[in-house]
Each structure stands twice: as structure tokens, then as C-alpha cells.
View (cartoon, rainbow, N blue to C red):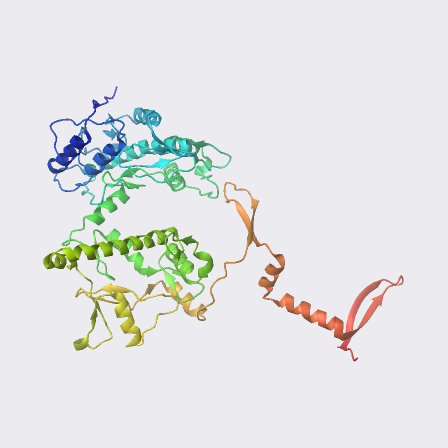
Length: 555
């Protein structure tokens, strides 16, 4: 049976820029157009403006679609598909390339269609390189590597299929509408390298992610004893479906995506949790017993409560963290020396950050200073009523739990409450913690968090092995990394890490005892006399020696 392909043709004519801008403003207010707007092929800025404008109002309507229809776009509605055929039946995959509004139901034909767009890339000539720009809706990805752009466009085809599955899943699973911003729904992860298969004795690589997944499935089909031969794994499963689910953790394959915000997930359950978290009913929500936040289900409540319980202990101080990432964050900022870890310098001042994310948070500070100067000038020109409206902001209130009930002091900032607790009440930070933390109470006030939840074995480990704060780690040493074994079916590739200076390495291992012994021996050689007894054989060879007396040399 041949599947039908619906295509909408866009006639292209030259239209003045002002007319197009008026047309897009009209689309924003009415959401329905009676005439088809014309685009200028060479004007990329107009296309970008139209794409951003049609995504501004996302949840204002009561219709079942989550992304509003734009110029010459068909309104897509979710279809209730049996759960068994959710990923193969009634899929409406839309090509969102510039001036292309084609719809497909066959995934192979859709992939071929998307591949043809690789020859329609926009290019910007620079001094020595050429930038290739993706014209997919609300994407804007650019790169100088053509093969990377090919992988990027092929990923759009794979992602569009997941969006189509996620759209129908809303009707099939009876899910609520996503409330996140959809302006980044088509922004994809970086794909600087080819998709490489790490199955043992296989070195295939692909520019198409779907071809990569199809290749790995062949390894799963012909796997003996349902063994995962991905480099360094070696897991064995009783059934092939379990092996298939496991291999997705290596290949990062996803099965469904949120049609509204574009986030993709490994299973239907993750999409359901993603939408349930955003649509918690205040009447039926289940409160967390530790912080009081409302959760949509018991499962989400258990997952949330894990964030309050510390399961990993720091070996350097009396600190515990709920996850390995939080513990690594603590080690990086608390124990590593600040001189060597702050490698990301701000281009506008002398500040140096530990990570790129810290630097990205710091840079807007320079822009805020400029905005404050502009706001001061505008406030002088504006009336008093307008200034008061700007300053009306809901502020948090921080209350001291150590003051008497009738004399409780309330602060507008947590830092001021911290200063009050330290200077007035003599409060101290526990070892391993850099600041006080506050949580909201039943009366809406924020108070100091005085409890920490830990697993019993973690608490015992901290209490038994704690000996006060230790010195910061020294990260100025240089190491050699050498490969000593290749990866097999059951073991990963092995490396040996050693200090570049072997004498220094020996001194660190022995705590400096070797240096002391060498100095003592050197002093004995110069200022002492040893009397030794030697056993010899008939030929005069020494068999055994023994020191019977040693005393300083008298000068």
C-alpha cells in the first residue's frame, strides 16, 4: 500500500520588507491568515524573524496543538494511536526547512528528502573559512566543517520523527500540554565527530545517526548469549529485548520527544513525568515531607526526595552530597587549589572562573552595570508612579529561628540573615560547607536548614573517619598517562598514570623516609666506623656479613 505525501508549495515572489513585517504582526494578533505571504529567498533575516514570531504565543490557545501554525503551515493535531503502534503508525513528520512545508508519513522518504537540503545551505564567506548555516526553523546552527553540518541536518530528520511520535503520545497517553518555551525546540546537541560504533572488533562510523542505530541493531541480533560487547561493558542479559534497552545507554538513542519544547527521552515514562511535573494540581498534588513542594505522583515524590538525602561522603572533610556530580562540584571548589583550577578568564576584567558555566554567569554582570546607568537616566525623566511600579517586586523574607518569638528579626536577603546568625548568635559553618542554606517554612518565611539527611553507612563513615579539615589538594604535579591494555569484550581500555619525576613519586609514597635514610647513611659514612664479621669459603668468597659494632669516628 502506497502512503500519500502531502506537500504545500510556496510561490516565491519579491515583496518589500515592510509588507512582510506588517504581515507577521498581523499573524501574531490573529493567528489565522486568509492570504499566503510570499518570502524573498535571499533575505535570511526575514525568515528568522518570521520563525521567531510564530513561536512567541505558545500556550495561549485552547486548541490541542502545542506549536501554533505559521505562514502557510498546516495545523497538526495529535492522533490517538494504539500504544503498540505509537512509533510506526500515523506519523506526521514535517520538514521545517526554509520555504519547505512538506509532510511525510514514510520515514525513509523523509530522510531522503532532508538529505537533499544539504545542497541548499547558506554560506557566509570569511577571510580564510566559509561558515555553513542551517536554515531549519529556530535552529541557527553554523559551522565551518561541512561534514559536521551534514550530521547536523541528518539529526534533524531523526529528531523530527521523535517530535511526531511525541505529538501522538499526548493523545494516546492522555497527557497535558507542555508549558516550557519552544523557541529552542529544534536546537540540537553538538555533533563535532562521527557516530562511531564501539562494539569490539568493529570500527564503523557514520554521518547519519539513524544509519548508526541500524548498524548497532545488527550487532544485537547476532550477539551470542545476549552479551553486550560494547567496549568495557560485558553485561549479559536473559532476553534480547533487555539487551536492546541496555545498548541504548551506550548509543544515546531516544524513542520519543516533547513536541512543544523538543526535549527527547529514552521511554514514554520520561515524557509523561516531564509533562506531569509542569501540570501539578494544587488540590491533588502530593507534598514532599522535607521541603513541602507539591509532586504530581508518588513516583515523582520519591525521585524528588532523593535530592534531600546525601549518599556520597567526602574523603577530605565532614561533607556529604546527594549525587556524584554534587560531590565533584564540592571537591572542585572546596579542596582543589584556586590558582590552578581557575583557568577561564573574563575578557572584560581580571576575574577567573573554574568552569565555563561560571564564566557565562559572570559576563552579564558587566551588562547589568550599563543597564543600571541607563535606568537611572530614564527614572529621572519618568514620573514617580512609574518608578514605584518598577520597584514593586515580590521579595523573599528570611527570619531568624534563634531569636525569641516576640522579637524575631526578618531580613530581605539571605546574606543579611547569615551575618546576623554569625555575629549575634555565634553560628558557624560545619566543616565542608561554604555557606548557610535556607528553606521555606509553612508561614512563607525562609529559615535556616538545621537538618541533613544521610544514609546510615555514610554517617558512620564520616563519624568514624573524620579527623578535622585537611589541606587542599595540590594540582601542580605533572603526570604521564600510558595505555597498557586494549579494550576487550568484558574490560575497558586500561591506562597507567604515573608522576613524571620518579624520585618525587618515591618520596610521596614513602612520606619522605627515603630522603631521611639517605641523609643518615651519608652522615654515617663520613663520621662513623663499622666493624663487620664476614664468613668466607675455601676460595675466599664472602658468604655472609654481619655488623657487630658501629661508633663515631674520633678525630
